[in-house]
Length: 418
Image 1: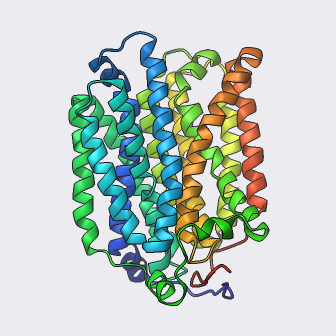
Image 2 (image 1 turned 135 degrees about the vertical axis):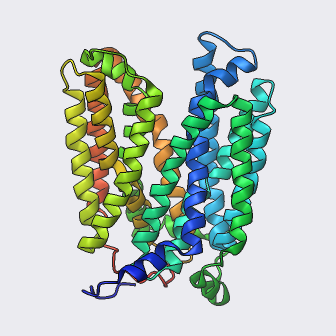
């Protein structure tokens, strides 16, 4: 499972060949589509609900209803696509997930009532759930062990830019057209995936000991594995605390800080995701340079914790300062790519897709608990102290998870869990 560390350094041409591998390039576009859809709904939520007849407080209540169904689809999809990926292959789940997403997104542009909109958001979430984990699993298995970090980081850095694209498309085009564009991107991605080959590790495993559907869950919940699985999930919680609470509620937090001007949530989202994209490259490059996943993770997590404290203690900041801190926070939370890579590297080939697909979706799903905890604390503590206390709790869990990880940079992934 693990080979001794080596001081061998790869040439720039070897690194370039790794990041230009078809699995990496197509995986990056797959994650781009994933993030595009997640952010697009946030951008078009109000005009789309108005378009089907809602107004006033309904825009908030029905919007929350839709996003909860979308997240439910992602949580369920993370389990289903992961199990299918370990049973039938990494490429098959990537084809199946993008087909479902594309059709659901096109249907999103045709809805005229809340029930059909709910079904479409659920199916879109279900389809998207297989994208990131499937891509990371495939790339981790097709690239050389000391180069795979470059591939997974490029996937994250390019994919996160899908948020920027969603912001522009959702602003420039009618909400129905924006959904059609998302469906079209999915169909284009489906065509590009035809040039990607299946993982050799999976092919070898399927000839030797292909797991029965669902057997991965029995293996996962064994005492020897459940601890490291939970550790992998916990280190991702701070990322979605930042994205789902700090960024999306940044106008409210800025007002409580006494900001000298209003903060626009769409600008905060664009800056945060720009920071996340650049941060993915920085964290991945740092990890490759020091030959360690764990050290890179702890460095960026501690930087994120320090910056979160800085954010909540700003005094009468200007909007420019608030935006700048949000961007820098995005840099710190760019460890998301390494987080998913570490999850894939902690388990054998016969359950790697299940882990890599469920872990990021469970981390995303934690946003429901994080948001409800904040809403529970806010009346007693206020927006700032409530938001900061939630952050401390989330980081305490994340750092606890970090201590439960092993170093995986030099691990050989061609092994089975028994």
